[in-house]
Image 1: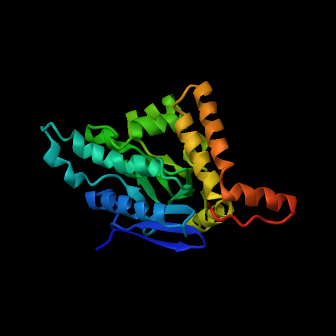
Image 2 (image 1 turned 90 degrees about the vertical axis):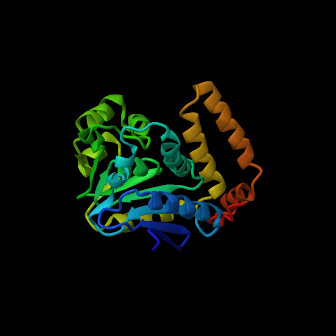
Image 3 (image 1 turned 180 degrees about the vertical axis):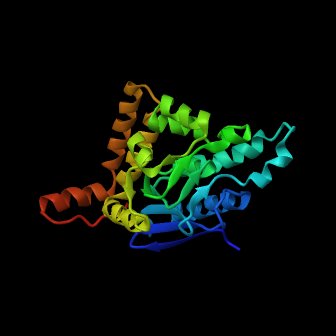
Amino acid sequence: MKMVTYEIHEKTAVVTINNPPLNVMSKQVSTELFEVFTELEANQDAVAVILTGAGNKAFMAGADIKEFPEWIGHTGFKDIVMETHQVLNYLDHFPKPTIAVLNGLTFGGGCELAMTCDMRIAEEHAQLGLPEIKLGLFPGGGGTQRLPRLIGEAKAKEMMFTGEPISAEEADQYGLVNHVVPSGQGMAYAQGLAAKITGQSLQALSRIKHAVNKGAHLPIESAVELEAELFEEVFQTDDIKEGVQAFIEKRKPAFTHK
């Protein structure tokens, strides 16, 4: 049975993780996420992607702990860990805007998955955390790297050292989520946000994402040079012609994403 499914409506794909009861990141979920997003990258009907978990209990409550015992006392499984990183890195650099709807527990691998998305909408009952320390381990899905980049080193270390969850409201104050909305309204809010995005040119949107993601790890001089290269590229697209022409003619542009 498929654990990751999607549907496309008005240029927005909604991807749902359905691995009851808590939508944990099993090997199958990881594999299917990669397959689904690969399909969506090639699908011209999808300009933005919303990612959520089935039900209202959990977005994703971590990794599948049942898969851990076989690793205890062994070495040489770094390659297995890197397979998960390959999926998460792919989602992080996915060339279309992504929005996570956190509709419940967002723990461990679920929090790490959410951080690969461009934006996060949290329903008010959601809780976020990296509780791995309580098992005698630590985040192994990019948490030690993405969380400090998002909220700063000190707050990130506090969350990882204690393993204590934070509320949606605290996550908003930390800058870990973009918006907090009433329970049950996360998807509608995300679709409204996606509608504002999907009317734009994917040629420009993908370059914004690339410039921000790559530029964050470069010295400012190299980063602005990257921006200049991408800026020159976008002027070779059909969409820039349409956007400028529409502005001159005082009408709404009809972008073709070419």
